[in-house]
Amino acid sequence: MFVDKAKIYVKAGDGGDGIVSFRREKYVPEGGPAGGDGGRGADIIFRVDEGLRTLMDFRYQRHFKAPRGEKGRNKSQHGANAENMIVRIPPGTVIVDEDSGEVLADLTRHGQQVVVAKGGRGGRGNIRFATPRNPAPELAENGEEGEERYIVLELKVMADVGLVGFPSVGKSTLLSVVSAAKPKIGAYHFTTITPNLGVVDVGEGRSFVMADLPGLIEGAHEGVGLGHEFLRHVERTRVIIHVVDMSGSEGRDPFEDWQKINDELRLYNPVLAERPQVVAANKMDMPESEANLEQFLQQVREVKPDIEVMPISSLTRQGIQELLYRAADLLDQIPDEPEVAEVAELSERKVYSLEKKEDEGFRIVRENDTFIVESAKIDRMMKRMQLNSHEAILKLARTLRYMGVDDELRKRGAVEGTIVRIGDFEFEFVESSSYY
Picture (spheres, rainbow, N blue to C red):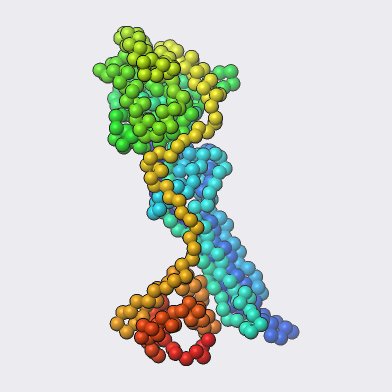
């Protein structure tokens, strides 16, 4: 089964906690602080592996949680940093943040990688808080939380040549004839429901990768018939071979088929209309094909005089080798990686944002006799601080005073003994400045 879209959850590792410790050696009086810092949490890194072809693995594992850093140690020893988590993805994967819609990366080459979730910093041990005024602090920090997010992975097949056309025009048969690929072939529409890849050996030391893409129908650019799921794979191809059923065996007009498919490509992404294209007039072994080809050539020349039309028959292999030579010649003339403009759907969801600055403000809400202080800065500080020591409480109190929280509480009517809630903690408001 081919899987080309997956939603997963990633959580980078938390930083290790710093510790409070002191030197306790027999002949070292007043040894001082010796609590080490915690280690950094592991990043989650997505790396391209050319050996992968699908997102199948993400059907069975949807949650990725990286290890946290080790706690600090005594004797001023730093806790070990956690080893980064490497997640392998196939080439051609687009990584999108689900919440913001931002495209984080578009990875196409083997070995390319991107950090999708950064690990948290380790907490500082009490050795970091030593000052001349306080040479033996009992302060330490908790590790910072690692980033977490939901990510959508979208795979666009990496192929040199893409076969496009209506269902049942012979794309799968053509791929099976020119390569060792064994796509499912049947006498009904949508036999191919997932892209098939095959390596084509042209001869003379030349080869390329060909993709048999599922059949398109009118309205595909709007998502009709899973159009977006199929069209996204056409973007990666450097040359398009447009397969047309020249026999008209199903009562369709070859010229109308050619126009409709080209319209779908153009409406989905205008760049695809400029991609080198060869029309493979297939099923030339059928009785009506010769007459239909003459009429088709006249109609096409009026619209696009420079279009190449090559008559072939996948059944009798008529014209197949000439088609492969032409595709190889076109590939030699164009860059390895075609420029692809953002699809309307992709450009709409792309987000550009400036680097976020820390919010220094706060808000006070009163519920009955309790004052609730809301502040992103204070919340982050309290998550980092180990509020199990008197020194830590004093440090928090000083921070609140410098931010102006004390003055604002007094203006709102807080008096000695009033309950103040910050996050999950409750404190009594104290007018005395002795704790500063």
